[in-house]
Every structure is written in structure tokens, then in C-alpha cells.
Length: 437
Image (cartoon, rainbow, N blue to C red; front, side):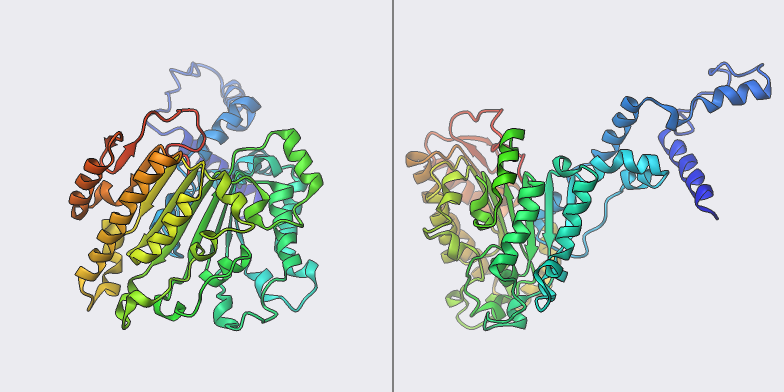
């Protein structure tokens, strides 16, 4: 079958999809009965989808692009995985109908981008330009098609565990500081997305963010992937133009923008519970470097929303998170989940074999005891306005914990199960509600 025949079949299939048989009017309703074949074909030819005005076509493209949040948002709290089910992609199918429709759908196709950076991490022996080839080609494509302003979020993904390949941290497999600044300059200065998500093994994630994390007990946790999500308000055109001229070669990514939201997904600590004296093990986590002062203080000063997800972390690790939250003077929303939902619990049954469930829930109960006092303190002396326990939303085991929260958080309103508010939250605030992932 030739290209034109395939395009014709795609177009006919699309028209059939957009207009189901039960919705398709009869020829009598369209006023075509009684007309000659030639006249009827002429009228029908003028009603093809491609002949609609651009404004109507844009409405169709936009409607097809609104099919729920992208997978990187929808599955963030469930943990990074390589086998998530793919959603329907009607907009991609539509873009294959013709070259014109491909051109018209590009702005919607690249609202949310996914970029694999394994190539950059594996070719450290090559020149700087070649090491960042994927990034440069990606940004050049966006620039050539004038798509920079349409990109809302970018996901950077890597499977490569730099610690496994170079435990001494001195291997040439690591990107040098100049390479990292070039990477962030290309992505955040030329494209400047409102949301940046990085998914990688713990050591690789820390390296990309120019942080140091403890890896001595990495073998005990065996966490394949962790994720970080950063979000900021959309920059006005004049501020964006000034930012592009200034460049980001001198700033780490965490200090490059006034990020207002931080999400951390640290995976499951269940494998560590199988080890001797598990409570002495240190989780390979960014919290060790983020919860102390230094150049990252700019991040803490701008954060208005913080979300943390992990599965049965140790209570002393949760205390690191609370230390980070206490030093965020503008923090208004705090979300936490420290146990998997019911569906994820079924998937993790193999990790829970030969474990004493009392150990897991003892850590969870102690963690929530610390969380309770921290939330009360941040409400009294800080800016915290909303607290969400995603565990209490669905988990009956924490019903007693929720009752304790209700008794201690005097002056807080329980909006619904697992959600407490202190006063009213401005509906127009970009950092409140469900807008973040």
C-alpha cells in the first residue's frame, strides 16, 4: 500500500471515529436525496474534515489533546516503572493522517515531552557537543518548529546507575559540571518548561542535580528508580527573554528558577527490612543534602508546596523530610504518603514475604507521630495552610492516626478524609489544590 493510500485510509478511519454510525445523519436529513450523483458528490466533497476552518480544527486538536494528565503525572505517586500501561493516543494518530495535520498538531503533541538521556551519560569519552547530542537535537527541533513556548513539562529519564558502574565517583562516565550546565541551559533557558521531572536511579539523580547522597547502604534498599518533580509559575514573555539572554551556565538547576513546588518519589524501603538491624541503614536520598543549608537555600525560600511519597520509609528518614519542611518559610501545602495503596500493595507482596508486618506499621506509626507535631508547629509558626495524608484517604489501618490528628490540630478544618485546612486557601493560588504532581 502506498503512502497516499495509507493516508486516505487513516483519514477515512478518523472521520468514522469522529462520527459514529448512530450519530451519522441519514442522506434524507442532509438533503441529498433526489440530487444527481455528480451534484451529490460535489456537496459531500465540501464536507470533508480537512476543509473545516482552522479555528474548528484547532478545537478538535485541543479536544483530542485533553485526555487526562500525562503518564508522568498520573503515575508519579505510584512510583517510577517501565511497564505502565500506555494510554490511547488519538492526537498522535491524527498527526499521521497528512503532512498538513502533522504540522497543525505539533503544538499539542509537544506540550509534555519525554527525553531519554542515557546516551549523554554513556558517552563521556567524547567531546562535549557529542555527549549532549540528544539534548541539542531536541532543543533544535523545538526551535526550528517554534515550539519552545508550547512545552509545559519535560521528563528526563535514565536507567543507568552511575554508582553501580563507578562506586568511587571518579569515573569519566559522570557528566562534568560544564556538561550539566550545558544540559540545563539547553532545557531550562531555551525551552523553559513550567515543570521538570527527572526519573533515574538514586546516584544518577543526585549527580544530575549536583548533590551528594549516602550510598553506603544502597545495596540494602535496591531502589531501581527515584523521581523528582519541580514546578514553577509560568514566566511572562519579558522575564523569559531576559532569562534566555542571561543563561544558566553558572547556576545548578535547583537554584536556576524560583521553584514553588517540589515532589519526591523515593520508592520502596521494603528490601532493607530483610537486613540485620535495618533501622541503622541510611536511605540513598536527596533529603540528606536538601535538609541542610547552603546554595540550595534559595529552593527552600521559594517552595510553597511539598509532596513526598515513599513506601514504608524509616521514621528517622521521615524526620529528615520534616526538617526540610520546617525550613521552608513560604510552605502552604504539605502532602505525604508513606504506604502503598491497595493495588500497589498487591504488587509488593513478594517484597513483604518473611517480614514481620509489625515492623512496617511501627515505623509508619512513629513517622505519623513526628508528622503530627511538625504540622502543628508549621501551622503555628509558619505559613502552612493545608496538610494532606494520602495514606489516611484510603487506608483503614490509620483510622486511629486520623482521629489523633483531629484531636491535636486545633483550629484546623477537616475538609474530607485525610485532608486538613487551616483557614481558607485562595482558589487562584497556583500552588494550592491538585495542580501539582
